[in-house]
Each structure stands twice: as structure tokens, then as C-alpha cells.
Length: 451
Image (cartoon, rainbow, N blue to C red; front, side):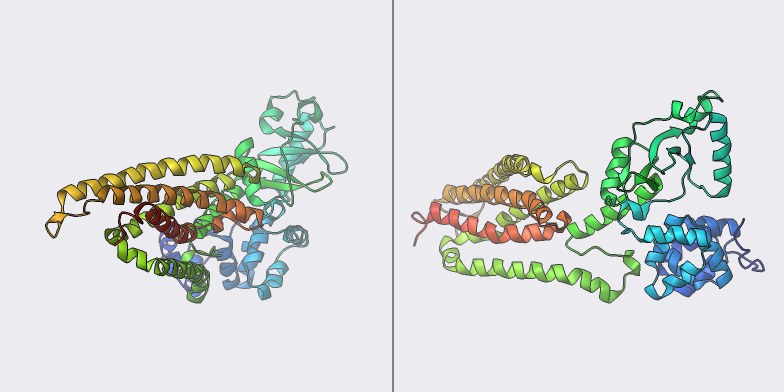
């Protein structure tokens, strides 16, 4: 079966590469026209490359006869993705384009959340019976491939109750004796995922097991389908994109950047910015509380921005490392104490390095520059330098701990750790960092620097 002849009478066809380059800036009508101007082979390849959202809009823009062909060219799991991405009032129309068997498969997939293994799986997989001979198995697999199975990496051995009892690779089948039974050569050490398992957890199973596909089973152990490596590539990209957007201080976008409407973009970004702005007003309030002290200590006010930025930078580093470790399964909730001890030491060491640089900076500037004919920082420059150094150590240590532990707090509350964005950590560190800075300055300079 080949795609319908798209605009065969066109004198000059659009090149697929040109359409890819222009795709993001084209309106829906131009996209459909450009797609229909592709050659049959290019159109098929292009259709399989675009996202489920783009497929949904493209199919809905085509003539009905072409809609039916293109949606039936997809595997059931891909059809389910297209239906989920389509406007709610168009979904029944898309389902009506399917044959009865495929419609049942897609409905079963739509019963699962799209970020679960059940929502990712393809219900069409190569299956065998344990009592088959190798010769019978090869013939049966050949027939399955011709009829409906598209992705064949392994053949899964099921009993009469559809329970998964083993798996066999094609290499094993080809190397085995023709009269050998499938049960004699199948591997019974199975790696499976449950249908309700989150897609991030499924991606970790792929990474650990190094497989091309993983079987999906229900609560009773009956096989439901397979998740393939190409599905997981999309999952990893989607999850990484979402985490990066959240770490940057924005809610996750639900579509490609250029396809998100202006109003929707503002909603995604303004919420966090308002929270951060409120945090900034707290910083202003804290500085106002210490205004008299700032007037007394003179030069020390010039170091406020430098000192509090140390806390924000250290905290952002720590939160990014911990969030990524959580996403990869390297760190779990029970590891919070180990992370606390590790980051306490790291924060103190980093603060000591930065504090030493701050002290050296004040000493050098004191001897090189003058203020009104006198050394820049006066006779008590070492006290000012010590205040800056100890403040940097305290602020850096505290900021590191805030950045490292905030993801644990969010995970414990059932929230996404990626919400511990760098701007949020920096804002929290700024407020507390100013308190630390002025507390240390009062302790060190209250006697010698008082007017």
C-alpha cells in the first residue's frame, strides 16, 4: 500500500528539506498545501518525522480520503498520540477513520495516561507459543509481520492465558535446531514494566537493561504490548525539555516554542515571575531594615550584590545537580541526609575559596587605590575583608544547602523537583543571604566601625 498520489499534476514539487525548514513559520493552510505537494515517498517519510501534534493538525486539514489513509498508516500507539493531541471535538472524527480492530486497540491505549507505559506501548507485537517448534515459530512470525506487526525486535512467548513466560531473539531462533521447542531456547529472566509505570521510570529501565523493546504487563502479569526504543527517545527529549523549562523559571510548555500562543506563553511565564518578584520585594524589605547599618559601615554596602550572588550561584548549581540526579534515579528521597552532608561540605569549601578571593581583592585594592588621598578602605580594611570573607562562606554554604534540599522538599510534597528552579533558589538565597551578611558585619564591626 502506498500513499495517495499527492498533487500528481503539479509541475514542480516542494522539496521535503525546504518544507522542514519553513514548517515552524507556516500557517496550517500552507502546511497542508506544502505537504500535499511532496512526492509520495517524501510525504510518507516527512509524516513519520513530525510530532503527534503536527500530525493531528495536518490530518484534519487534508481531504477525507487522504485523512483515512494517513491515520491508518500509523501504529496504534501513534494513532493514540494523534487523537490525544487533536481538539476534543475532532477526536471522534479521527476515531471514525479507523477500522474496527484498530479502533479497539486505540481505545484501550487511551484508557491509560499518556505519560504511563500503557499510553506509550504498541499493542501489536510478535508472539509465540512455548510448544511451537523453531520451524513453526519462524513461519508464524513471517505471517505476523506481513499482517500487522511493524516493530519486531524480540518475539514474546505467551501461555494460553496471555501470561508472558519468556522471550526469544531472532538470533536465537535462527541458530536453534529446527525441531527444537521454543520453550527450550527462550529466556525466562524477563525485564518488564507495568502498564501504570511513569514514562521516566520506563526510560530508566531501558537505560539499565540496554534493550530495544520492553514488554508491558498488567497487574496480573498478562502482556499488553511493548514499548520500543524510539518511543523512549521521544520521552527522554520531552522530559528533558520540561525540566529545563522549569529550571529556567517557567512552567513547562505543552507545544513547540513557536507554536505556543502569546497569551498562553504569558501565562506560563508570568506566574513564576510574580512569585520571584514578591521574593525580590522581601529582599528590599530586609535591606531597608538594615539601612542605618549600611550608612554606618560605608564601603561594605558595595559588596552586597557580590555576596548575595554567591549564594544564588551556589544554590543554582546544587539544585541543578540534585534535580538531574533525581531524574536519572541516582538520588532518592531517603538519600536526603547523604546529600545534606555532601553539600554542606561542598558549600563550605566553595565559600572558603570565594571568601579568600574576596579578602585578597580588598587587600589589593586597599594598597593600590586611594580615596581622598588615603588608602581606600582605611585602617580597618582587614576587618572589612574578614567580614566579606566570612559572609561569603556563610551565604555560599546556606545557598548550597537551600538548592540541594529544596528538590527533596518538593518531591516529598508530591511536586516536581524541577520546580526548584534556579531563579527561585537564587531569590530564597538572596533574602537569607542579606540577613547572614548583616549579622556577620554587626558581629565583627559593631565595635571598631561604630561612629
